[in-house]
Image 1 (tube, rainbow, N blue to C red):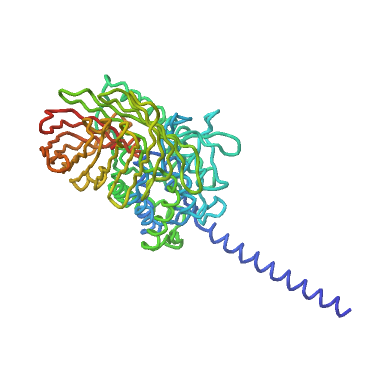
Image 2: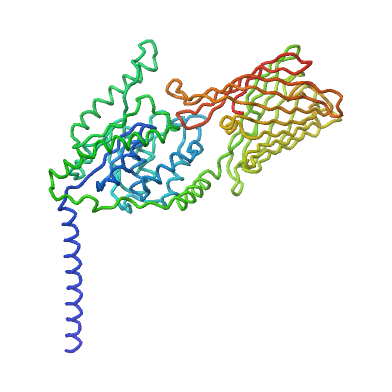
Length: 557
């Protein structure tokens, strides 16, 4: 009997605790329901969508709660990271200091798109500890477009990185993303500013952000790309306008419509979003007070984020791990053409083919083709490494008159700002090896910022791969100075600048038998495909004393 009574008392106590918990939970839920639910809807717009960061910062500073985030394309990226706990300041640091271009890889041959984003997804997972929709402190919904039907899909399960990648997969640029056996593309195709989705999810007040921007010049009817872009924009805008009509407040950052590739202007866009949001704060407050005269502004704090130094370290580690397999330099010959008076044209090109990984290092097959004064020279090799510090290749080379393939070694790497190359071939001539040692500091991408560059080269080049054939040691020292240039967009595909430059140096043979001046003048077109992936073209007029004038064209130096 005593045991039975004790059991009853334990059961009664347990039920009391459960009832108390449910009562408290109910009161907490009621407290949330006592005020209107606020949804922030972030529209798509490529680089223009970086202005969302400024808007979120302004809302946080003015005590406007964010109970739900719904995003399309770039809006999905910003919304997902903010919902995962990054502060607006964290987001601003991320987009203004990190070279996100290394997180996107060209797809050769194209497979559903021109650019892959697997590394970018890996980076998001590392940065957010593989956060899932179910774990987020702020509910987040990514808007996608179903590839087969074209219908809008609101995604909120699994890792946020997968939903974000699907929402930003611009057709033709990125491949469709597979989720649960179905394929999806950019949410902007179905819903550029998904206000209806927020309404269906229960939002009482919807703050929508439209980052389509304003056209700054009329459409050129003779330009096929401009006409196509304008027509596609009109098709998408009809849906966007209908959606915006359902929002309580619409924020329009002052951004040009043609700025979709201008990721380098992140600070400007963030500032534009901040200013537009500040201008809309009175309207937002008025709408909330209309629904609830006692609306508790500031009662829900924004995501705290990480302290600046901690976040910088976190980003650096995530970026390093996500790009650990990125090959920074091409081991095969980069495409170039040299035309010089009184000499045959010299041409080279090559490519690396990714084979897999050996341990933690990528393994590559490489092929190079050189056109020299004697004829065509072929190089086949096997390379290893990412070139962070060191990468290398074992190769075999064959040219006109060679009885057999000649073995050799090549080493290359980046150490800080220094790019070095070391190459040795055992039988460039039947009884003589060939070799080259070269140094460039800084790399051209950094030189365009600093305005100067130094190149040093020593070689014994019987084949004439790098200049006139010579069995003795030759050297070159060249200083280059680059002029700054304004960035511009080209054909809606490239974002970059064209820098003019001049170079002065000397060419010599060892022992001082011959020293001649070197002059160089030309331009470097430093472009980014879709504003993200670097592409570089150099065109220069050259002069070497005793060899008259020449023309040099190279890609990717």
